[in-house]
Image 1 (spheres, rainbow, N blue to C red):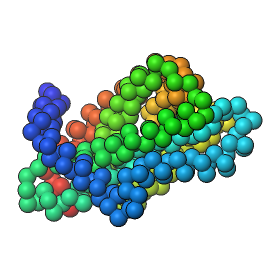
Image 2: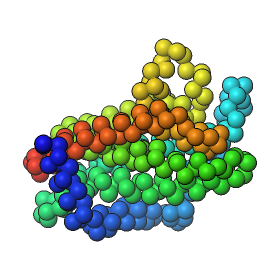
Image 3: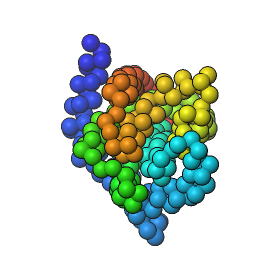
Length: 265
């Protein structure tokens, strides 16, 4: 019953304040590129330049493991992980960063982490243009299955929202999380086959891949973008279930403690 009430409140406030959410997302994007000469074009240029550098460094090293079209292999994993890491980090800092606003004006507090995540999601969608350009340049297959990448990407978005709400809540009461989270993301990045082939991971450490929702999304997208085939439905199911669980935990935790935020920030 409590879960239903929380869900209804979330949907009601979302409809009521969707214009404000749009304005906050727009503001976050503008602030991100405000002092940049190239502005939003960095959304295209940064992943492209990083892919070129890492491809030069690692493509020869991993060629013997049979990784075909390494630029697409690398870029797919990196774009997905960069979105998750950047969005959850921004969400984590959003409540403390917006304390001056919600102490004076009532706005549903979940709006702040949600806007931080959605602004990163817009950047992620823009960066997919780079992926498609590289696919064209490397003769990667364009198939009808590209349409179905919307499902793992939606799973990624909702999983990120759930995790974002969790870390935003915890960070209000445990401020050291901001320092620890960067270390955790670095460990997760190296534990996830983003720039190296999954086959080189020892069997005893494969559980990190098997129980990693981010890796499940990466593999779903690689199946389509790299190999031109539909993904394993069990990987999609795992990503979707993980997203639902993260959303339930995130919403329940956030709504339980949000009234105490004003006392802690």
